[in-house]
Length: 149
Image (cartoon, rainbow, N blue to C red; front, top):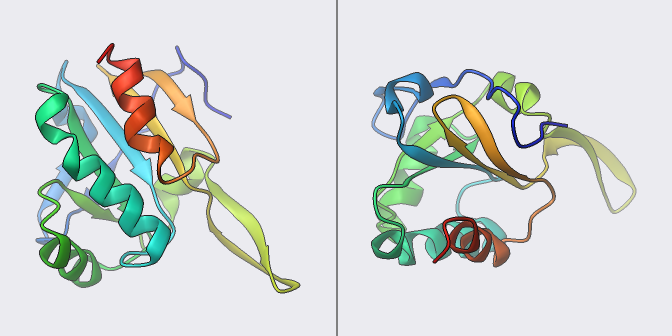
């Protein structure tokens, strides 16, 4: 697992508009990168809308969501809830694997691979905070607390 002080793995993916996003281009700005299992599902909607609702309270900190959905699905999700921040398509789950959030899961006795809902506060390529297995409602609360808000 990644811990505060760890070097943040590289992120270079397409966003919901098909544009290339690179974590390295965020410079010294703080960035909350959160991983969610599937766009427009109840937990992911709660998490994403909760973050949207605190954008005015987090100053210059950027928010970036990542899931295995395609850019088109991410675009629908963004349009439906007017999220207003990049949603990245990690269809090959390479970034999720680098952040150690691509895990074996189980539902109704069936095992499958998927995203473990997690969030990371990153600045200048270094992880400041790492929250694995975070609840949707706690994501915005933890971010505000980490920023001293």
